[in-house]
Amino acid sequence: MGPRLQVVRESSTGLNELFMDMSTGETLTRFQVKERIDQGKYPAYEYYYSEGTLIIRSKPDSSSYYDLG
Image 1 (cartoon, one colour):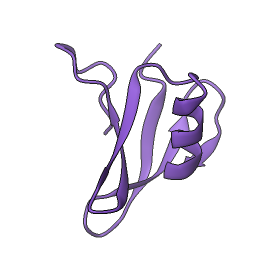
Image 2 (cartoon, one colour):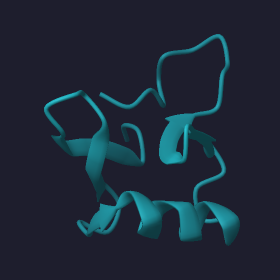
Image 3 (spheres, one colour):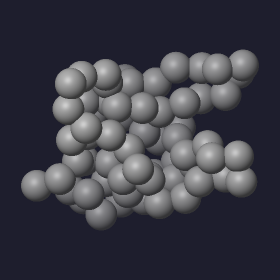
């Protein structure tokens, strides 16, 4: 099985906007992913804010397995 989340839409500036949960087939916004991270449903991912913009990313580790792309 591959990574749990996959990016399905980026903005013109490269901001990840929509994600596919590869286990459920659901398409999620950044804010929905944030809520699920807060609920502990995506332990391999985290978020932060950069200049007020919500950024979703995989937790840093030595593997590229969970990287968003």
